[in-house]
Length: 96
Image (cartoon, rainbow, N blue to C red; front, side, top):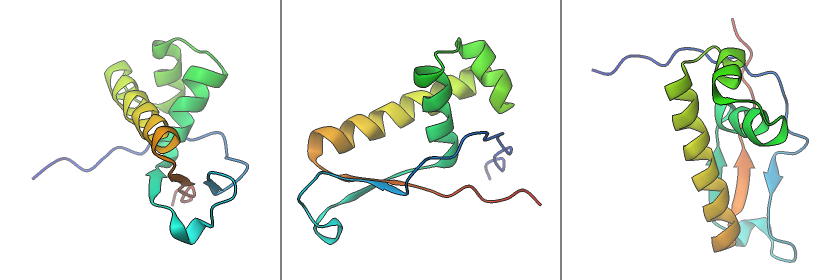
């Protein structure tokens, strides 16, 4: 049985829930779902341009875990762009 995932610190919030190709109704598109830790990793790595170690520290994960999260997120975003899919951003669930 795998370990339960550790909670990640998510500081940013996306401005929208969906990004999709223009001119195609959302109901006709396949969706790719981006988890909150994935869009936060993209924000830290690509928008704020932090080094992996600093970005991992800000998310309270190891550098290796951060690297795995950001690689997975980039693959999802690239696939959605290249295949004309909608990108759905999951909402952040409040911590108890």
